Image 1: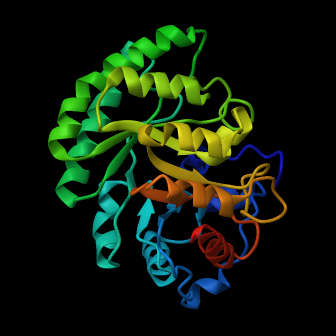
Image 2: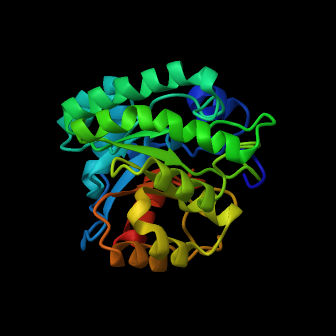
Length: 291
């Protein structure tokens, strides 16, 4: 599937049947009936899995598989899925909010985006879940410095509430080269400046390793330099956004060691799109990151 720019937004919008209909490679899930074996032994890193990567699994099936593997979270869900997550002894490490293209960099989006963020903060806080997600939005001709000011102004409006309720707002870094053309928060330096300007312990970066590798590279040094500003990590193989195997260029075991070495206490979310048996691929990735 290399070269096919399927994204989280596409799959959530299209649904499993539509995704399959356009040729997205999602293997048959005969393995779902089999309980996966535990894949975590060391547990220095708390691991999560992103539900959108498994469109042919229900939330119930995803949570059952995650719990069996030893994961602690299924993420990028809404509050309507919280009961299912808790029933399996898990948390939702990241709660969804607003769309990716229309984000905080435009004041005309602030009312809708901040409303969604506040609703998610309230729900996550009540459930005892740690994070909600937000996005810069696309440039649409706006200079990056202007968009940065608008994003800072927006996040300053919710930072106090996030602090009071013990929930972290995560601004996700995404690549604009392959998957999200024109997305503004596409470089680490821009995101770092944003978090520093907001100046709240409850506003951090969602450091997506796949996206950062495409745009900036230098993954381990960047993590070691800016780890205090990072609240969550995502994984996927580069190129292609598939398994964390030897068919892609990143050394995920070394990256996981670097994350653990910073004393990180948050979650690392597996966010690759399986091209083989999905639960076997997930188990392999979980073992690789269990350093």
